Length: 135
Image 1 (tube, one colour):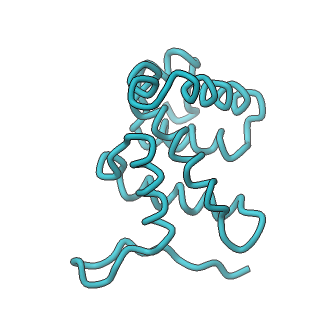
Image 2: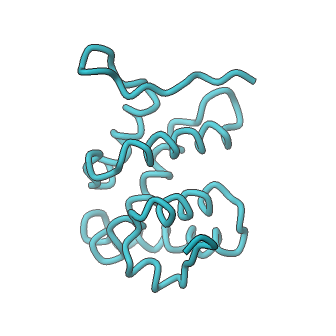
């Protein structure tokens, strides 16, 4: 299967690809400024979404779901709940718990990405006792 490549743009001449713009919008929707997320991490998120897509492209809501999980991992429980709401924070915590049990789900891969990219909040690492084989 040939999938469309993502594009960061070049000197403002060529625009960002639609998938990266969708992810940026999803990050903003959970109060995470897209510039806080390294471009390499965003590209990897988009590629993981494509890998797990049922069709040829990820479902629009998958960008929001990825942004919620990555945002929580990046800023931690209390700031995430304060910037969004406690109910959403609890939902994301449930997803993290499920990911810890499944081991190889999309959510588990997103959590591992934040850990390997070293953008995860230390409080999240401590709370869920996360570790990487390379650490």
